[in-house]
Amino acid sequence: MSKPIVAVVGRPNVGKSTLFNKLCGQRLAIVEDTPGITRDRIFANCEWSGHEFLLVDTGGIEPKATEGILAHMREQAQIAIDTADCIIMVVDVRNGLTAADEDVAHMLRRSHKPIILAVNKCDNVGETPMELYEFYNLGFDEVMPISSVHGHGTGDLLDAVCAHLDFSETVVEEDRIPVAIIGRPNVGKSSLTNRILGENRMIVANEAGTTRDAIDTPVDNAYGKFIFTDTAGLRKRSNITDGLERYMVVRALAAVERSRVALILVDATVGFTEQDSKVAGYAHDQGKACIIVVNKWDAVEGKETNTMELQRRGYAECFSFMGYAPIIFISAQTGYNVNKLMQLIRDVDSQNGARVPTGVLNEMLARATARMQPPSDKGRRLKIFYLTQASTRPPTFVAFVNAKHLFHFSYQRYIINQIRENFGLEHTPIRLVVRERGSGEVGAKDV
Image (cartoon, rainbow, N blue to C red; front, side, top):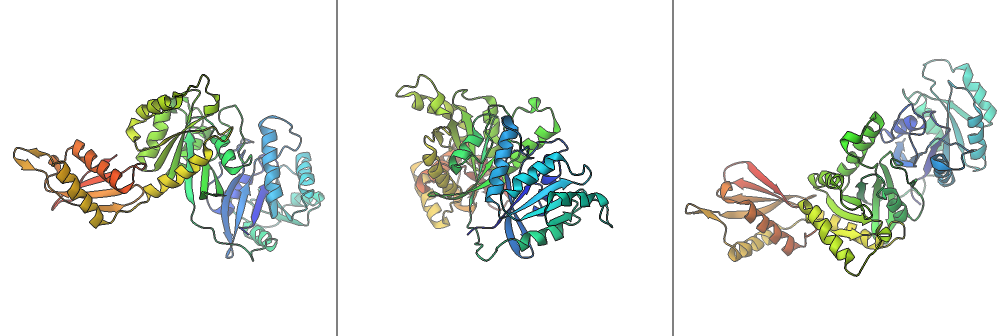
């Protein structure tokens, strides 16, 4: 059995995401005064009194919504309710008991799960506000005043939650590979996440900007254990008009920073755009293992025998600054090549974390310099005394030389290519740091 699950639910704009952030101790969910900011389910680990459980934030529930984004949000909330071991229903003491609160409460009663009513925005310390007692009309036994902004009452709330959970069979999670899915809006990031999961975890719609948070989702399958992060689409900076979208972009870029593998999604029906290269460039600069994923291959018309190979060459040219990144054509809609993508994620992550022993590295260096002599200038020839690996993710090698100016770019590329070929590091960025004997770090090459 994995960790117990606790769902935070309620109507829109009662402070669910603020409470979620307070309980998990991180700003994972976007918080705005506008209703409907949270749409998908957001997961985070929460620890209290030595116990760990999984906390799930949900979008505001509109029980009567039958179509559009609101209906998708209600479906996502229903899935969270169905899978939860305990439910925190959040209401707003300032607005009092509303018809929408009663509809949500009726929806929760049908789950037959333990339900704790958290009456939010009781911000003043001291006596319980009289408005609190109105919420006993919902029929729940545990009604607790809290302030998600200030944290008042959240300790008692967590005590009550833990009293309903069974921690006897909780297992410790193994190390997972963090994978960030990034790209322009509407390239199929959420559809790919859903295909990998085998369920409609993320809301998918034709309108751009459906995904707002960077959403972490654990995945266990035949290829291993992963955490996939579906991110908001990254648009040109000049097209970003409001603070919410700027925050969405910051969250997406932060997801790349904490990932080990970045999937750069491209729309096969649109082809390469300048924004695709900017998105990929950010992951490249971070030294992540990258995969160029050309999605919607099923929607490309007029395909012939060599269409894929021709397009592969075209994309390789467009992404020439990261020639190490493999290119794969998939369809999140039909599942075409998704299994191959999962194996490729494992391969590039393994290469990005590879370590080469110094002795073996210098045997390779001796063969490489014998095959192609180091360059010389004005009678003085470059000497590479030895190579050593300084770190991983990405693999970073340090070359100690007699004169840094003799180590030309072309010869650095030659050495890096020899490292790739000899140690199976074709699909990871490699950094080469050049040091002169008796001096500090003087240069670095990232290829």
